[in-house]
Image (cartoon, rainbow over the protein chains, first blue to last red):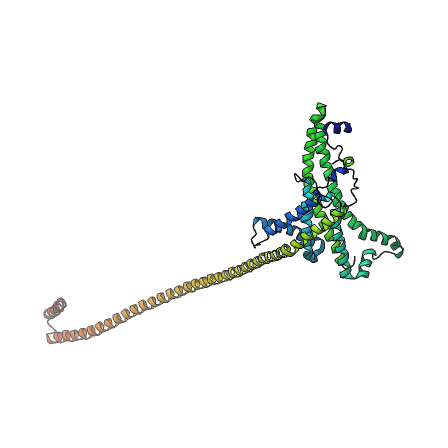
Amino acid sequence: MSGQLVAAEGLPWPPSVGDFYPPDLAGPWVTKFTLMIWLAVGLLIIFFMATYRNPKLVPSKGQWMAESIYGLVRDNIAREQMGKDGIRFAPYFTVLFCFIAVTNLFGVTPGLQISPNSHIAFPIVLAAITYVMYLYIGVRKQGLGRYLKQSLIIPGVPWPMHVLLIPIEFLQNFINRPVTLAVRLFANMFAGHLILLVFTVGGFVMLASDNVFVQVTSVFSFLMAILMAFFEVLVALLQAYVFVTLTANYIGTSLADGH
Amino acid sequence: MYVAAEGVEHHPLVPIWQELVIGSIAFALLCFVLLKFVMPRMEAMYQARVDAIEGGLKRAEAAQAEANQLLEQYRAQLAEVRTEAARIRDDARADAESIRTEILAKAREESDRIIAAGRESLAVERQTIVRELRAEVGGLAVDLASRIVGESLADEARRKGTVERFLTDLESAGAR
């Protein structure tokens, strides 16, 4: 059936991984995805520079918005996860949060319609920074030996258990953490885009059907696409929040003294 | 668009290395600019605002405490003044009472004195009158006796006439 429909309409149906790799615009360096990254960087720099060029104690609307984002990350993420020590990381967390949120929201931005984070390269970059950060901070704060001991050995456990626990803890702290961080963000954006494709393209495919009943049913497909677009906005912000919260949490455990 | 048409098969979990580079550079640039030029001012502003708000709260608290203290003070003063006023009123009442009784006592004394003086002068006058009368009556008696003796005692009719005349004289003298 699907093959028939694609032939009829010329739409890529069903949606596939290939939809995430549009043709390069000018070689592998200039693609829709890299341009979107530059766009996000440009937008954020302009936004913060414009709203914070001349900050006042009683803020303007723009300044208030910028400060609200900063305040959210500072108080609800950094301080919540890391206590008072977290506040000095709040600036980086804010940048990270804004960058992820904006690039995620590209997924529901008309004209762009896809998040750069649905290419795993970008989540990998961000997760790698978090990874290096929490390892470096842990080693610098506690020394390599103590940091490893703290990360791998759970106190108060009979020693034979360590045969089992040390590999698990190692996997948990040094491999799963960065991998899940990157994959979680990537997969959410990937799946989100796929869902929107299914309902939007599916709607068009149904509309192009010869069967009147199938054509009428396409309305539900479009309604679902709209609903999912709103849902994607929520997911976009939530994933940014989760990514930054976990980053804060990991750095927090590196700073903490012992378990 | 289509995988087959593209001819390039990407596994979604394999990153494109150019994107890794671009992502790193772009994000590093973003971090550099924002962390250097924006975020420190934002934290400073945040602190300034916290200070301003906390300072304001503290000032408000201090002002409130001062106001409370003043109110307490005024209340205490008011209570003091009230008791003072009550005391003064009681004193005045007591004073008035004592003055009234004093004046009454004085008046009574004065009236007693006046009455006593009146009585005394009356008694003196009576004494004087009695003394004068006694002298006069004595004189009169002597006068009468000498007259009676001077007339013939045997002459009843004349004696009667003499007494008669004496009394008439006495009356006329009283009338005069």
